[in-house]
Length: 147
Figure 1 (tube, rainbow, N blue to C red):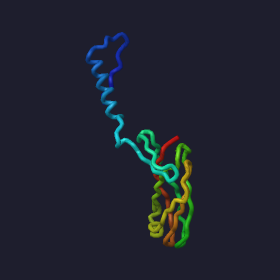
Figure 2 (tube, rainbow, N blue to C red):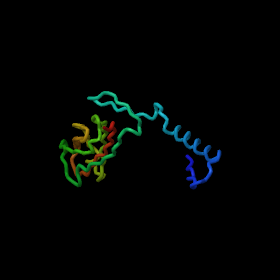
Figure 3 (cartoon, one colour):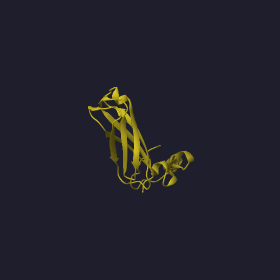
């Protein structure tokens, strides 16, 4: 989109300058016009489907370190939690992915389960399916409708 030069005080406004203003407004209108592809739908258990413009939704990318160079036994588990600003109207959708920070064999065989999701916090468990040294983090993608 074009950046319009600011007119000087007392400068006469001519047809070319007005044309540039109208063209810039029209270009902006096309960029922000509502369309079905510019909406996000969040389907939560307690609030059903909620739709909002993508610009009116909240996305958070979070990270939690669960273990750092610790030895875990097969079948053991650790809990984690991640707090975020209580800006959500309903519990958001959360996706959690384990990160094998230490690149260890035991860190390759983990399972992540989310236990609870509220408007300001997510809690989960990491289960270690193999024993050994681990350094595990959790990547979180949180998508919701703000207050």
